Image (cartoon, rainbow, N blue to C red; front, side, top):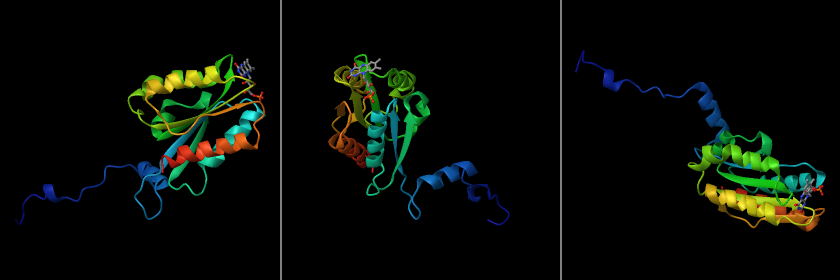
Length: 184
Ligand SMILES: Cc1cc2nc3c(=O)[nH]c(=O)nc-3n(C[C@H](O)[C@H](O)[C@H](O)COP(=O)(O)O)c2cc1C
């Protein structure tokens, strides 16, 4: 109708900010609207042996054959609830200390548990633990907490006593790849 109101036919301006568009561009493949999945590695790495396990796990998680998975890593004491909420799955790495997980990984759980409890149920996780001789208590501690969070175990834990040899590092690599593949 000539002269009528056009209020209902105005083009709709997307309600997104420039920074949100930039963020989205970084998360999608060119030519695709598929959202990248994100894998968060939370680790406490106080020694060369744990560094080797971390690097092998990271190498598996970033295997070029696994597409559409972005890997973010955080030292346990630097990881935040926002990191956990923004991820789709988790890899956890810790030494066994005094019959439990490291204090650093426990602090991580203390910080993120309630803020992330509702939103992260059912998400996949994997775990590696390094100790001198007995990782039982560390595994039990982590399992109790992730059970509370409702995270889903998608790979066998990698438990290493003493210097990690070729086989142990291959197991770490496999762990990283398996958890990442569960997100792709
Ligand atoms: C205070 C302390 C407590 C530890 N408790 C345990 C333990 O309960 N079980 C175990 O297997 N290793 C234990 N360890 C050994 C650490 O797990 C080990 O030092 C860590 O995984 C790093 O390994 P690396 O020093 O051989 O590189 C402990 C180490 C320290 C310093």
